[in-house]
Image: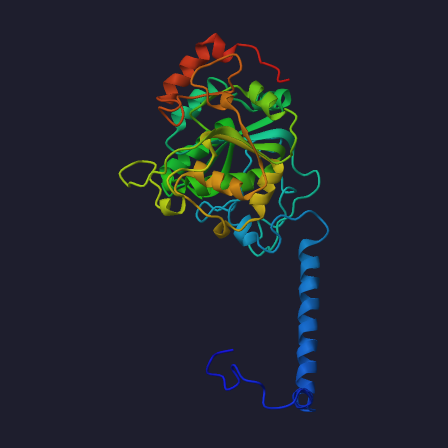
Length: 383
């Protein structure tokens, strides 16, 4: 009690019985006949609101598995619907129909829909879904990949999926450049190996693109792991399959080639971090960006979060690492995912630490594929 109170530091000037009588009389006054109807109507109003909210939830969510029910605008629908004039639902441009099955997402075409439901058995079950992040200036990289470790036909991709349990798709957003969009449409018609997401293709939006990818991937495939990979690495799908299939003590895994390093505080450098004051002098443990994987449960958590509830740092790999700090995940550091040369057990080869991928990747991909150690050495079975 403040020192200005007349009773501070002094005994009360009336007996305890008097104080009790005062409290009783005050309560009786508060419950006068004029107050009771207002209290009663207030209680009735609260009860009606509670019943209405309960009925709304039952009608909206139903009994099926729902992702982001009641928050579709923040979690899913806004991510997988392209803005005008390219407005479309996310397209899975491979499969029997050559398009995303309508059963995967209900209500997505209806702009007024307030929920997105995942139906049982509606998503293909795979060991891993590998999203190869690409852009509008990377047509030559994609051409090189299709000439090396990634099949260039729908049948080839289907066979690779059957052999390894891994589904591969290029992941790309959109641009306002109509010429580039038209060129992309032609490439899609030829190869049918893209998933398009609602993200403007800009370097500064790589973090948003990655989050969008994981959310769309979760809708499209029921996978044990979701793998983010760049389009400038040499990959052995068979070995990646063996790595993902290893027995683990926990179902919640963050798998990658882990690193730490000094936080870049100067705008003169490429990896400058404007939010460096939040991080201190050294980054926390996180995976290199060219390739890493998150298990199903971890991605499911990401899907349910609103976009603006997750901290976005300048660098995509740092941002993912910061989210993993908050999640109850098992870190798995595997150096076969960042091998600078092809070895009998290398999974992903790229020029670490010189480049964040293969330097001059179009030429290097073709060169590596000609080496027997890269393309023809047998797969090592993990014990």
